[in-house]
Image (cartoon, rainbow, N blue to C red):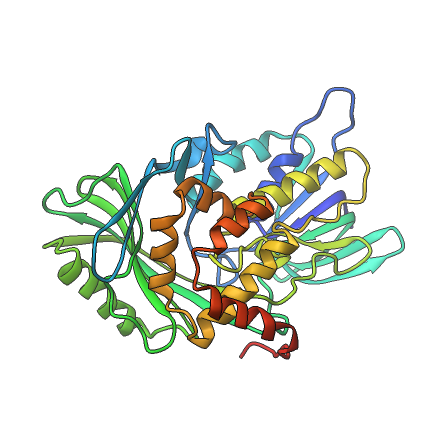
Length: 395
């Protein structure tokens, strides 16, 4: 039987971040022994993906940042473009393979961290912690016993919610024959895409050079498209809207993020916790997760180092989650027009304040100043009806 003080299940952004924060030895303290369990090659190991977030100054993982931007742009379906300088913030992009290349060597050098490759079948409570039951690719079984277990694997099913909207997307990393991109500006939302009957859609462009960019088509809607549907949407966006001309598709990525007001339990046993998206790190109104899971894993690591109960904190305040629940319901019910709402916010609210609001870093007075730029009557009507709505499983 293997033993560790801390078992971290899943080697994605949350699992790697927590293990990295626990690696090494602080002066005068004993380093906690950490076992990081990642899935073997196969369907349980996620494909390479892109994470974006905003912060000021240098960050812990800046060496893995593929590109960053000081200018953001939002395009309404028609009318003038909205552009903003977000200094002192920077909008940063990290690719998961770059993140692993930065973090994994540190973990391999850390004397207190052991990386394991196995499929976790179950986690069972014990009087002194929990047991992680694992199977390896050769068919053998192993047991890992730990005082604390942090599970970052995606949930098999979502908890019941009043509203769940799926944010789904497909992206191309493209190279054009001629300069086509403003590498200083990230295109955050381009609403010149055909809008679905239910929900909203937009283009998303992250240029890494004058001829290179990640171009994505994104929808907030009840269900994902077919492969042909995404192909058609991106062909239309790159050729008809962006007029990129001949291009080479270097790589692709796809994903789906449930935007939900479902409560996401972070403690699932006396010694077992969920972190990352499974532990509520995703901001329900935007789908951004990376910044939230960094706050969560930083707090967990600090608690463990100081001998406190390491219950992961809520990545977003109760007030922020309540406002998100109202927004999701208003969008899903059709009471507010999504493109009009987001364009109004970016046009009328100082962008740095709006980004701080979207990251849950504003006070209640600032929240009110943002809220007054939304369609007040539909939002108030939604807020009044929300407490009486039943929570239903997500299909």
